[in-house]
Image (cartoon, rainbow, N blue to C red; front, side, top):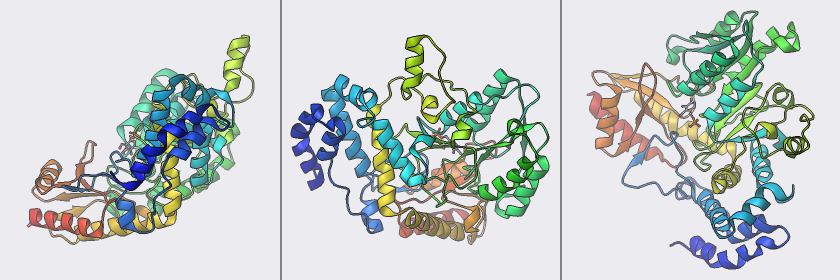
Length: 443
Ligand SMILES: Cc1ncc(COP(=O)(O)O)c(C=O)c1O
């Protein structure tokens, strides 16, 4: 047991007794949680993860291993809830603004995003956020959702399930033939050409888990702004982004990216607890949505129900935030992951993710018999690298790497590739070892 863990456990009893004192649960858990560790160099960051050292983990984007600050926060809230389930949840969720832990988490997320806390709804994952958007928009027969052939199954299925109910149509376009050869101009040009008068939504994925390409969302949003200039507010094309593999991997300000809705799980690159995600939108986008799941996050909805009257005011983020009881120790501990990113520095993290994955991409591209499907340009790539090895299926490549204790993955799409992805838990040497293994397979 390390020192921070010992001191954490030693202070538990005393601190949790403070649940009933002013400041309550939050202060109690904060007092009982070890101070944030030093995160000045990458060895210190890597040491936060309990990843088995018997493997080289190059599929970290799939689902997070909780780093120490997140484990400590989960443990603090878990103990508080286990010791006082009613008092802890009552205080953390319903008692007052000052003790509301959802608000506290939204403040941490907002500080990281450069957004306002009231623009954020907490979700369970990317999938839930996308479903809340597509089912909540006032789409009707005659309206069209334009999306692409490159998106994840959960994005396409959210659209299919919503259009089954609202009667809107769907069209899918290819943004490139070969991701590795794609250009910003061509992607933007194809989107501009595909928008029709009936198009109401453009659904895109920021960083594709099929090929690793990163879309130039700001440039696409600028093109949409031009098209929207001649449209009425109700006929605007709204930009919906699945941002899960960009958030925490590349440095871009979400509120300045120009999208109308941004959904991302935070249990991948952000390292927040498994089963957490965010949905971000500006106030005018929230106002367009009809909530789908009853909420516990907006008192007005409860008051209106209790008083038997309609809910007042436009839809706000809190009204879309799914209610019911959750794994609160996970939801409330999400803030610790965002604080960890802020402590390391989002720009430093983006540089590190680029450095490791650029090394991986260039290494793969240089191996005879390997075809890299991810663009090399920094602005069109992020932390996922997709490739093929001549004569081997992607599944066989992943198996051969696993035989050498290197964890890779295949992309779950109709056309599938092998993937290597490096994150903050990895080293350049690990990337090099994976490249040696791929070279041996290809030769
Ligand atoms: C592009 C993309 N979108 C969405 C998802 C699903 O994410 P979540 O588990 O947060 O719903 C994935 C899964 O990895 C993905 O690759």
